[in-house]
Image (cartoon, rainbow, N blue to C red; front, side, top):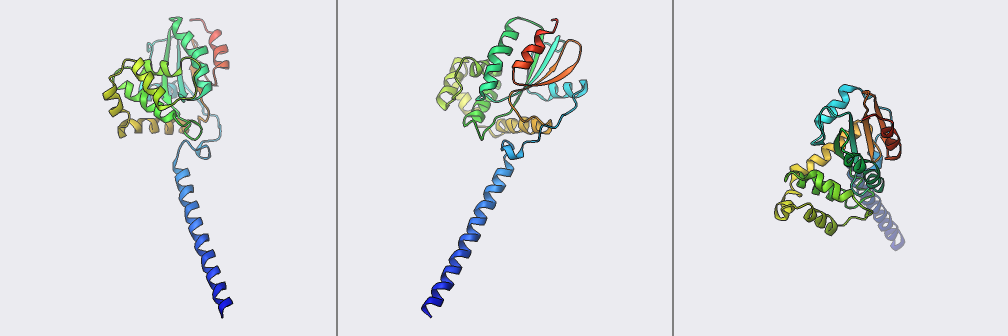
Length: 228
């Protein structure tokens, strides 16, 4: 009888562990499925057809656009502030392009790869908060410039100070739910366009041709062929 009781107890314990473990796995699965930055939720790189109407629609959707509407060249950027390739593209392509004073328009969308980059979302929120003070592009540039890729909370705050932000307002704004929703809206929009890498650039050249580039190397080559 004792052995029979022990056997029943083992069976009960096994069922509890199985059901409990299954519940935990199910919860984790639901959490992962709800995260748009999770690689499993990213679209396969199916080609999206870009035309002038879709391009201008994207420009209008962006909250952050600089450069004249009638610029010779227009770019749409999907990027992550902790992404080494995004930093390289900024330093080697975008910054020199804007310093050259050429006729360029740039629209930006957030694409934080949170499963790989711990501070990508925090940096995105920081730039959104800077935008509320009219200094999105200032903080955008400061975060991307130079060689540093390992962001930290302290580094982000130091960059915000360097941008000349009101730090009391900055700290309040960057945790505002509506501001954080803007980042998620950008990400969902990018996923809908089948963007699955950073940086991704959509280029409209001087002849109105629209091309998609992942990374800065091919974009730099394409820009070199344009007559500004």
